[in-house]
Structure formats: C-alpha cells, structure tokens
Length: 96
Picture: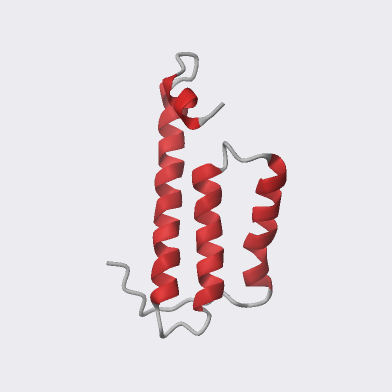
C-alpha cells in the first residue's frame, strides 16, 4: 500500500494516520539536523554525523513503506558512523 492509499483508506484508524504523520515530522527534523551538521565547519565529523542523522530521518519518514531488506541495509548504514566514532556532539550547533 502506498502512502496515498494509506491516508485515504477508511479501515485505517485516525490514530494510525496521526502516528504516521508524527513519524514523518520526526524524520524531517532529523534530516534538518543532518544538513545543519553537514554545513557545520566546527564539527570535524560532519560527514559521519550527516550520514547518521539523514539515515535515521529517512527510516522514520519511509519506514512503513520500505521493504525489509532495504530497511535492514539502512539500519546497517545507520550504525556504521557511531561504530567508527564519526558522530560527535557539537555544542555550537545553531539549529535556527
């Protein structure tokens, strides 16, 4: 079932639809943080942080509609930057 069918079906409850909207919002916020990390010149691990946050956002936004194999590959990609210590906390990240 594609996203349009999901949101227009009568048998899908309103709470399920609203929960999916919340997941999409969380994913978009994660993608926003990813691009802010990529543009941050003070962060020495900006590419690793970008990969982590963008992949997480992608999984939140598309998770319901991705096949299990693709979701598993994205999960493996998600854990690689932290394993290799390429994600770092930067306190100077101005998100606005």
